Image 1 (cartoon, rainbow, N blue to C red):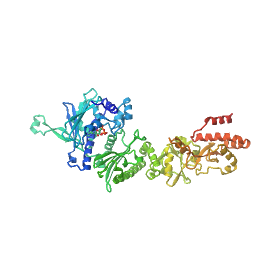
Image 2: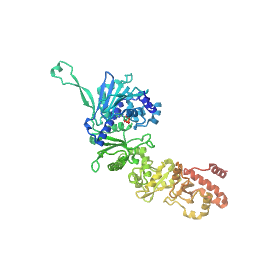
Image 3: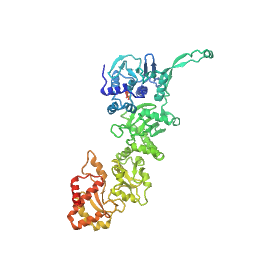
Length: 626
Ligand code: ADP
C-alpha cells in the first residue's frame, strides 16, 4: 500500500471527518470531473481529427445499489493510465482548483466549513460520504485498465483491472448511517435526481440513470387495487443546456446567482451579472460576474486572473488570462466562442479572435460599471470598496494607457462631501474661478482636512480630493489632466490662489534668507505666506516630486536615497510668530537658527514627515521655553 503525500493526507482527513453540512456536493464534484474527462477526449478528437468520436456517443452513468450500499458513477471520457491514477489521485496539492497550503492549517483549528465552501473540493470529497472508493480507469488508446482503491488516510493501492472501453468508473462504498447523518439517502433515486438537477443540470453530456417507472394500468386492474407493474428505464437527468446559451429573458436572478456561487465558490451573490453575446467578425457568448467582495488573496501574487474558455460548449481552458486586462482581474466568468480549435496555451495570446473578444469585453465591463455607478450608486460604492484599489493600480501601471478606460471609474473621498466622488463630479462642482483639481495626501481623510493648507482651499469653496492610498498620487500623475484640468497637490508651493505676501517677501528678504541659510539646504525656499489661516507654518514643495511621493518612495524596498521633494517652508505673515521672528532677527541675529530649526521641525511633523534627530529638536524647543 502506498501512502498519500502529506498535503493530500491532510485534505483527506478533512473530508473523512467533515462536519460540513453540504456533503451532497461530492456528486457535483465527481460529475464535473467526468464532464472534464469527456471534454478532454472530445477536444483531442477534434484537434487530431480522430474518427469515431461523435458527441452523441458521450455520456455519464449513475447507478445506485441499495443492497450493497454502493453508488457508481462512470464516464466514457479520456480515462487515466496507472501513472495518471497515481499522480492525480495520490496528490491533491497539484490540483489547480485550490491551494490548501495555507488554508488547511487554519481549517483544522477552526472548522472545515470555510475551506469546503470557498474552494472546489474535488475528487477527495467522495470521502465525505464513502468509507471506501474504487476508481477503475482505462486511458483512451490504451489496452490496460487499472483500479485505484483507498479506504482513507492509510493509503491507496493501484492494481490491474478490467474495463471494456476507455473511461473511468468511480464506485463509492457509502458510509454507515449515524444518528446525525443518513448516508443511505444518497442511494435514493429521488435524492440523486434532485442533486443532479440542483448542481449539475448544465453539464453538456447526458447524465443517465436507470429509474423506476410504472406501467399503465387497465381500468379493471386499478379497480381491483392491483399494484402497478414496475419497470426500469434509463433516463437523462440533466437538461444539458448551459446557462449562458439560454435566453436572457428565461433566466432568473436566482439562477445566475446560484450558477456563480457553485462555479466560482463564493458565498455571496455577485454585485453584477453581465450576460452578453456578439455576432459578427467574431461570435461569442460571455457570462461575467463582478464579485461583491475581494477574495482573501486578491491583492497578492497568488491570485490568478482569467475567464473560463469554452468552444461550442466544451471547456478548453479553466483560466484564460488573456481575456481580461489586469485592471479588471476581479471579474469571474466564462466565454464561449467558436474559435479555431488549434489553440493551445502557447498560441492563445497571439490569437486574433481572442484579442478581439478581450477588447470587446474590456469595453463591456467598463460600460456596465459606469451604468452601475450611475444607476445604483450604493452597489458601486461597495464594488469600489472591494476593487477600487485595483483600478487605481491599473491607472498607474498602464503609464497613461488605461486613461480612457479607467478615468471615469475611479473615485476619491471628497473633503467637502464626506463621500466618494468621481472626477467628473468633482469637475462639475468646480467654482468658476477655480483652476485646479485639488488633492491632499495623508494617512486619513481627517489628516488631509487638518493639513494647514486645507483651510484656505476649503474657505475658497473649493473641494479637496483626499488621497489616502499610496498609489493615489502616482495614479493621477499618469492621468495628467482630467477634462482639461490639471491636478494640484495642496502641498504644492504654487496653489494657484493668491497665497504669497509679495510685499513682505521683499521687505523681509534678509530675514527669510537667514532662515533658509540656517536650515542649511534642507529647504529650497522660505517664504512669507498667506495660504495659512490659523497655523504658523507649513511645508510645501515645488517641482515634480511631492512630499507624499517622497514618503512612498522612501518606503519602497529599493528606496532611492536621492529622491526627495524640493521643500518650501511657508511662514504665516498673519501669525504672531512672524512678528516674533522679526524681533529676534532685529535683536539677536544668531538666535534665528534655533527658531528656524524649531519651525522647520514642526512643519515636518505637520506634513507627516519624521525627524532625523528628535532630541536635537526637542532640546532646542526646551531652551526656547526655558
Ligand atoms: P480537479 O478536478 O480540480 O483538478 P480533482 O481532485 O477533482 O481536482 O481531480 C484530480 C484530477 O484527477 C483531475 O484533474 C483529473 O486529471 C483526474 N480525474 C478525476 N476524475 C477523473 C475522471 N472521471 N476521468 C479522468 N480523469 C479524472
